[in-house]
Structures are given as C-alpha cells and as structure tokens.
Image (tube, rainbow, N blue to C red):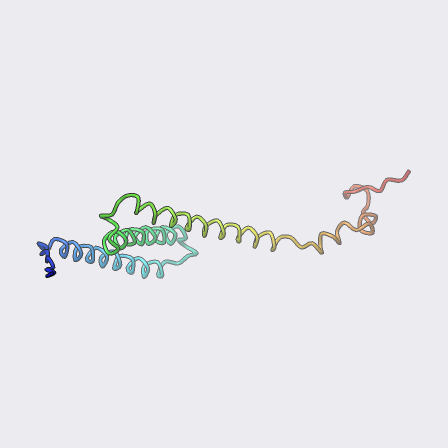
Length: 143
C-alpha cells in the first residue's frame, strides 16, 4: 500500500488577502496611536467632549481590528453561520455580564458613600426628637 499526498497549489490569492488585511490592521493601529497622542494633548477641563469623542473613535477602530483578526487570522470569515454564532453569542453575553457588574458595583459604591447607618440612628433617637422646638419638624404631643 503506497500513500501519496496530494499537494494543492494556491494561486496566491490567500497570501495577497492576508497581506492586505495586515496592511489594514497596520493603518488602523497607526490611526489609533495618532488619536491617542492627540487625546493626551487635549485638556480634559476645557474640552471634555472632544476627549470622549476621541475615546469613542478609538474603541470603534479597535472593534474593526477585532473583526479583521477574528475573521481572517482565526479563519471565521469563511466558516458556517452556526459556528460563528456559537462564538459570538457567548462573547456578547460576556460583555453584557461585565457591563452589568460594573453598573451594579458603581451603584453599591454610591450607596455606601451616601449612607451612614450610625448617623441615621443618632438622628432619630428619642432624646433628639424631644429637643426640637415647635415649627422645626416633629412636635411633641402632650395629652
């Protein structure tokens, strides 16, 4: 039994496509770096909206780069739709998970900073309620 391996020669289009995507990624990276250096020169006190717009642009460019990397270098561009959904749906759930935890953590931080149970308990003791004069809030009812 003799085994012969068949060798398929590509016409070079795949290699050209890889170099083209590598060029796109290089250009996007250089644009991101330029925007980052520009953002560092913008003062946050005078132009906070401009800094936010630059940050948003950088995030969008990073998403485009992630699409190219996943699509071409991880070979998902030519895969079946079900396989792509198997990867993308859990990724979106993971992003939602992180966003939800950051939101809840911020809410907890704000509540913790605004609520001091010791001060609230001291404000409503019977001794403090009796000291208030008429017209300042709670009135002492004498029967």
